[in-house]
Image 1 (cartoon, helix red, strand yellow):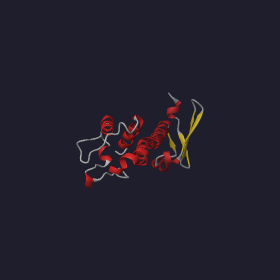
Image 2 (tube, helix red, strand yellow):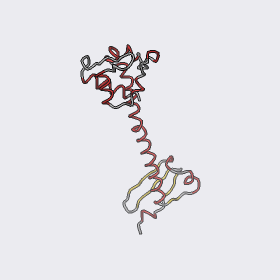
Image 3 (cartoon, one colour):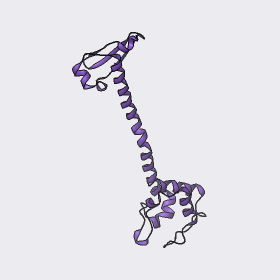
Image 4 (cartoon, one colour):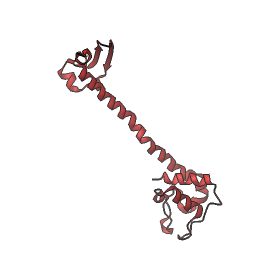
Length: 162
């Protein structure tokens, strides 16, 4: 019989301490990890119940760690969206038609750039390099006015507007 799995654990003021006779170790679980039922109805729980409580605490901790990591890309993309309107090339070459906040000019049929943010990198790069001679007003080509890195940066910033 495994002594650790059947060894009772004493509850003391709703703090749980377990002495493992097999390995001689002591573990403590804080009150927040102990269910209300355990605190109110019992003074002794088995090591199996203790293990369950520790596992629940681990799940909560993982969620607390994962949440900020999952939100990080959102914050990064928000920062990149601000980069577009602060980009020197955008201010010098795009702002006149697409507006200071990339909102476009509907009265002139110039789209807000966020409506183009879902386009592929290739499509946006081509549009910036070659312009659009079929639109009214026509978008001029910028391949001779901007470097490849400048165009790549603008494309990334436009895509960040999603």
